[in-house]
Image 1 (cartoon, rainbow, N blue to C red):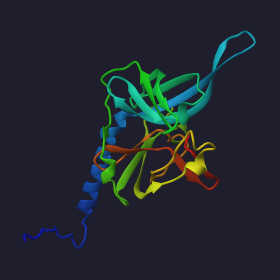
Image 2 (cartoon, rainbow, N blue to C red; image 1 turned 180 degrees about the vertical axis):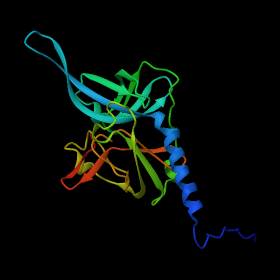
Image 3 (tube, helix red, strand yellow; image 1 turned 45 degrees about the vertical axis):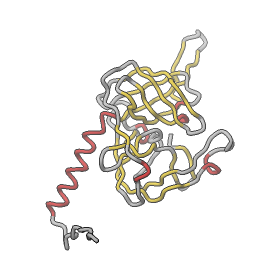
Image 4 (cartoon, helix red, strand yellow; image 1 turned 90 degrees about the vertical axis):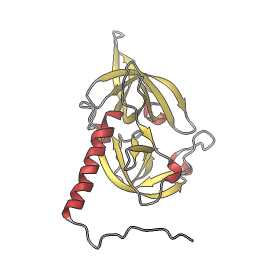
Length: 220
């Protein structure tokens, strides 16, 4: 029977090792940021003179599914909106329309009039393990609304298979929040719809909800 060789872990890590790891994290951000987008939604109202006015409704995050302008986000980010705006990481803004939406999974696909965009790569979620590093990119508190430059937070996958349907929705026959991935990466309002990347720069999840001192809620 042939034995399996195992590499010995170093007794200690040198500063150069930490710098190499840091540089790898920095490069990951450079590589994936162009695929992350900022989403803002509006209600359209009329005043006494019937002038149409855009009223801010919500803000969130998303990522580029296809180079021809298809964007993924959470459905709750765009729910009840009359107008949608998508801003790329380079600051360019586009009007968007809903191409498809699925209330059950709380996902939506938007379409903008753009081509040659940098689409994300998807990882194999079945190979995702507890305590692996992950990176959440998005638009917390609307900080990226004007620049389009997403924020990034680092954490680990702290649990798999979380069930939160009863905590997040009133009608479990319509929406389902099961088999969720829990992460220690910092998530704030505005991160909803943003991607969760692994260390290979592959999407392994969509940021959907947050736990706060006030309870559980969608991360608008």
